[in-house]
Length: 239
Image 1: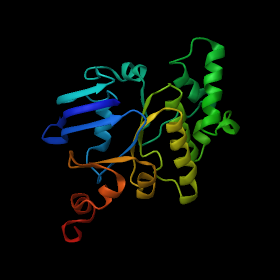
Image 2 (image 1 turned 90 degrees about the horizontal axis):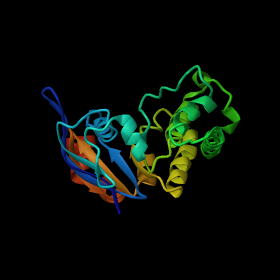
Image 3 (image 1 turned 60 degrees about the vertical axis):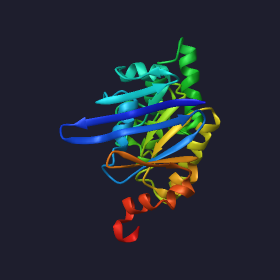
Image 4 (image 1 turned 90 degrees about the vertical axis):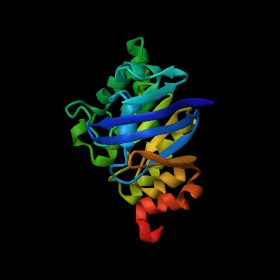
C-alpha cells in the first residue's frame, strides 16, 4: 500500500532549484534510503514532506491526503515525524522531559503521558539516562534522543536526516538495530545517510538525488552498480 507519493515535486530558491520535478512513492512498512552527493537536495526533500518548505510546484500526498500548505505541526499530527541533521535537544531539560515534549501530542492523561515516555525510553535504551540533562549527553546519545523525541509523537512515517552521522563504528550497529526495531513496530522510514554500510544494510529500496533530480529508485545492489550513480559519486573517469 502506498503511504506517501510525490509528483513533479519542485522547490526553487531564487535561481537555484533544490528539488527538480521529483516523483517517488514510499510504501507502508518499507525502509527507504535517500542518498546523493552534498547539495543534492536530500534535506530539502524532507523539508518539503514535513512542511518546513512549501513546494514551488508539485504534489505531496500522505495516505491520499495532500500535505501541501499544511504546517509542520499539522503534518506531525497526521503521523509524520522527523529528526534533524544537526541535533538540537532542549539542552537544559532532562532526557525524560525532552521525550515528554513529543509524547504530549498523543497523550490524554498524565498516566498515558508517563507510559508513553517510559515505553520510548525502553525502546531507545535511554532509561538509565532519563534524568540526565540533555546538553551533557555525548553525540551518540543526543542522536538517539533526537529519534526518541520524534518516536514519542506516535508516527507511522519517520524521516531520519543523517541520524548516524558522526558515530564511530562500534556505535553504528546499535543505531542500525534501533532503526530495524522501529520497522518491526510498524513505522515506515525514509532515511538520509552518507554511510554506505548503513544505507545498504537497512534499505529495501534506495532513492538517489543528484542536483535535485531523482536519477535512481531501486534495490541496493542495483543502485550500487548503476552507472549514473557511480558517476555522481566518483566522477566521469570512474563511471
